[in-house]
Image (cartoon, rainbow, N blue to C red; front, side, top):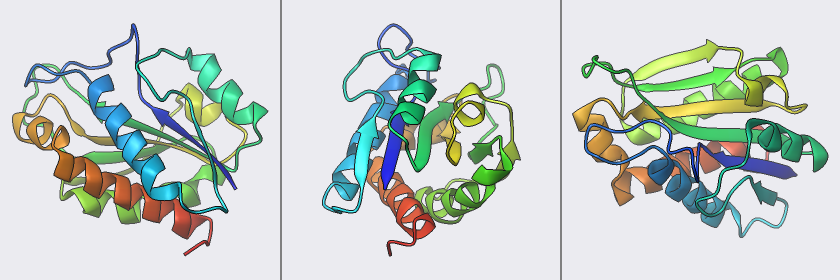
Length: 178
């Protein structure tokens, strides 16, 4: 199975700023690299990263890559933010097409509890990376960088390791490899 992993933002696009002075791209890349490390030993998987360093793939680069390699799954990881609403918290799983709903349910079942953050559910939204991909695709918002408690947790090794393990379990369960 080919799985494309996208660490949200990168390069010239830092993503959301956090209330603790860090940026989203510096959360998403470590999570994706940890996820890649967990899954790398499974020879049934071909892992393709949209970025493995601090680079900026365009929006179309992200979904075109997944489509061109004939990916079986696409996973995008982000950190959410709402300015002037520091109390908003929790994880959200987004999908667009109905063929992505089962994968969204797996991410919801395994990734959300792995972090211990509030469960804000599975939401249908029209994001380019979940709309333009030809395979089941999910965008996972791990927590709110605009919330001090969540932002502090999200940049910790422990949180990132637990999240990467939860995402790995979701991928393996969805592909019926575990």
